[in-house]
Image 1 (cartoon, rainbow, N blue to C red):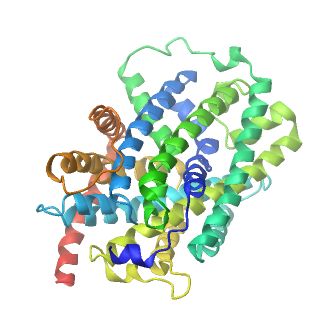
Image 2 (cartoon, rainbow, N blue to C red):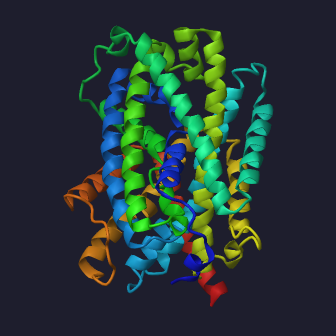
Image 3 (cartoon, one colour):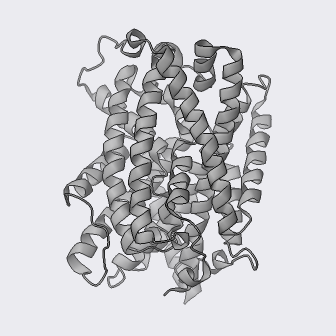
Length: 441
């Protein structure tokens, strides 16, 4: 048993694991990105992006499920790349590169939640300036960090409370939307909606990128697998349950919003959920749903920061990243340096605009995380028979191929600026790896 597994406490069951995933997946994402995804395809046909995003999330979720059941330790992708390629020349390079790029992408993902939190606060505080919004985001980050500065069993209880608030939010939204649903508005397609042009496929890629951003978190439990009871059983179940549940929530929520607020207006909205509830049930309902969305945003940032802080910790503990990140709190036994660094970088990233944060974080992550670990599944199946796999993805290799093609398509259509950012972080990681090897040797 590794040092990481000995130091962490397995205090999360299936319920907490599923709650952690769903809290992260729903979060502030759809309440921010519905206008963006409508704009990406200029109409209700954006639901094609949601549908393809669901397929990609299910297929990639099966990749995560197989790897996490075989290697149920802290660190997620870092652990899978380390173990899968341990006997190859890239056995130390790939895990380091993953943690390196995560330092650039993880805080961006968390920051998107803080940006959304501040954006919805402005529904009440209409005169909020840009810098006041940044201070609000920093305050939310400080609160999340404070809540995480405790032992994992206590964190599990906080997770359930935050999850309950998220469920109330989506039930209120979907219930109201179904009661007021107008199919004429929801399916008001523009004349060129399904014209298979270059613009259509670029827009579809943009819609899938946003959809996958909103789905991110179906693997969050894998990042804290060293703190999950019966991980070989509970982790795959938590992944598949959360993907299925959130896919249903997203589909209903998007359709019902477009069935109440005309999509040409919705795509211009700054706080679409509040405007939706105001039209459907009045100003009091809009205020109530905004409060619930603020709660849900904090739940998402809480779950994401929890999982993200375990990645540099696990790598440093095993000697694959800079050593200070391995420091644990003497009483609570949680990674202090890693938690504070990830939280601090998230605050810094929250000064960026949302429409830059989303493609940057996705482009930085796709190659060294999602694509690389699909390769890890193939390598383990063909060259590492010594690694036991309690869970095996269904219909292999079809889900792995679909996930690979889907991620490559999203990366290729993200735009040259953001694809370049992803390649730049990868190149910088190679240089950092060379420096780290000299320091560590």
